[in-house]
Length: 285
Image (cartoon, rainbow, N blue to C red; front, side, top):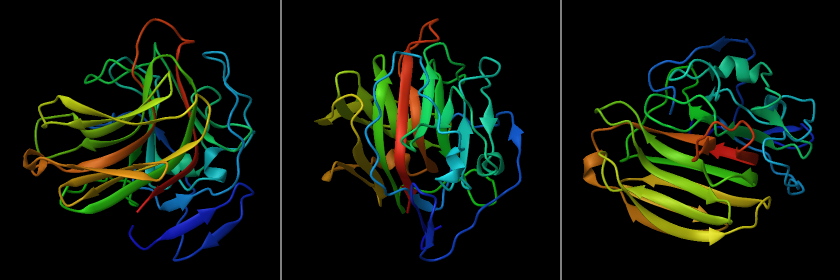
């Protein structure tokens, strides 16, 4: 992964700095262990996009007609949808994503060219959560689950906008993988309906978070973030302002990975309340 960089503009032009791999086959499959919680080639869309206009809750913005993979390299991501049997949400493989997968409701390009995720409050969720999500999970280039240690250095970066959220949505996280019994997180980056951006940093693999306010951005406006794990430290930047937090040694036994998208933080029987998140840039380094 490290050292491979691809730039994809909103117009579709690809500039390759150090190699690019694109998978074409198409495959949709059901979930697997830890699917609730993808490694992408470092890919960004860097173009000027207008901020999406807020829509009525649960009303999809008119799509662009193109698949997200036409502007984002998704070869090393897996998508979890808020659909399928309760407790076993549908997952979409990296090969299906790169092959042009799109969903009119839950995963599509909006007219501004943003990769858009919608998670309603009544969405199907995993056994370890009460909330549905439309969210990418980091994968390896060979299609296996990506995992790495908190002693390593990895960064997730994005430009996002949240035009629609009932209460709160997680737009990026570092999640625990194999190595122990916990299915919790190292950190989660939240956006609230009032525009507040908050970082939740886990106290231990057993749970509990310390919450840190990181700024406020109006609903529907674009903002940037990066989450870096660097040898037992979290470095988190929001709109260019960086803060740092220690990662407790109790996480050393675990492998971890990134997730990004719309992990809604409210649940009900409503199909129209929920969280919609648009990404105009997404990269892993």
